[in-house]
Image (cartoon, rainbow, N blue to C red; front, side, top):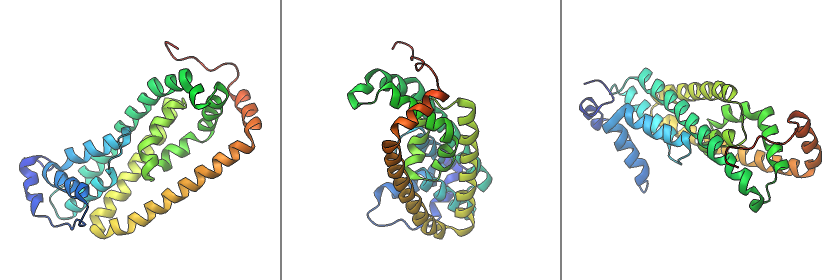
Length: 237
């Protein structure tokens, strides 16, 4: 059988990759990748991208390490992860657009989110949505929710798809080749970088919230100029 399916992937069982004590989820993920190869990578990465908080990056690195040991094909690992990221993100985008936005439009007042705030959020995604989608692929929390938020804030699908595909391919290539050439050591280097990116994202989000709070009226005016008139009501609203 071809690499990535149970028959061929039995060879991967002998591939040694240390798993930290007290990390049953990571051990389970490692075993899934060792047994089911490409399918496990596709499933975990796609679900994470669609909004389910799973360790897609770790699944990619595990498969890349197996590829370095000859039990999987690195081109197949990278292609599988990139395809899963793109497909999963598009599912998350669709859910946000079809369900997230209508819910906020109808019940946002409960959270003190009026049409003006929704319009400001859409305006900010109109200006910076592509950057958020691309770089969000490299930050754990954003990797899970960036696509959903893009749908909620009505980022146009062609623009979303371009930055989504670009980010997914670059991310899969960097982490796939990193795991392939550096093995387990790459995860040691990548983790602090990921934590640093997450810290920067949190600081950026806090700074953005303070900026928005202090420039609310100006942003509302800019949003109104960019998106004149009432927001388009979702079906059934």
